[in-house]
Amino acid sequence: MAAPNSIFTTAPSRNLAPISLHQSLSSPLSLRITKSNSVAFRPKPRSSSLVFCSTDESNTAAEKEIPIELRYEAYPTVMDINQIREILPHRFPFLLVDRVIEYTAGESAVAIKNVTINDNFFPGHFPERPIMPGVLMVEAMAQVGGIVMLNPEVGGSKSNFFFAGVDKVRFRKPVIAGDTLVMRMTLVKLQKRFGIAKMEGKAYVGNTLVCEGEFLMAMGKEEE
Image (tube, rainbow, N blue to C red; front, side, top):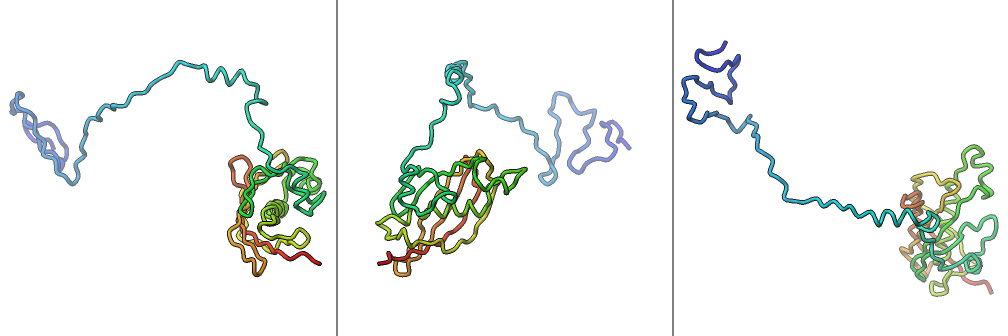
């Protein structure tokens, strides 16, 4: 029940004291607020930052004037398909590297595979939803690793080079017809004595990681 001569309160809070009506209006009202259950209301300071709005639309207009087919540059060519065929022993329908776009001898390579509906695996995988088989993505990445390892500076042999193993493979997203698979293979460890190379591989479509794993390559010697 409200106290006499006070502003109504049904249950006085532990944090608020009754305010007397006889209190002088000229004096400031005092509230007893404890630190434990109090809520402080502070005015938010004005931001000193300024937002600049530009009315210059020249850049946007210039982009609209350029046809979409001319806006994007093509991947560079470090090795074309003919140079790839000189390094890798694979041939149709199992050569799964179309172009090398970056190459550091004995260290790493980045190559692309243009995935098209004309690839011979799509009629069976799958007829209603063409998806590149994961094992072929791994094979394509291994072939990029072969381009790194078959360099004369590394000591690989074209006639005796094998894909020895794979570990920690993860498929992150399906690769479908029309995609461009960009694969990076990096040499992590090389044991020349045993002819074993460990490589790390990652494959992308655009900027999305679609496949990754660790690869083992076995290198032999030229047969005499």
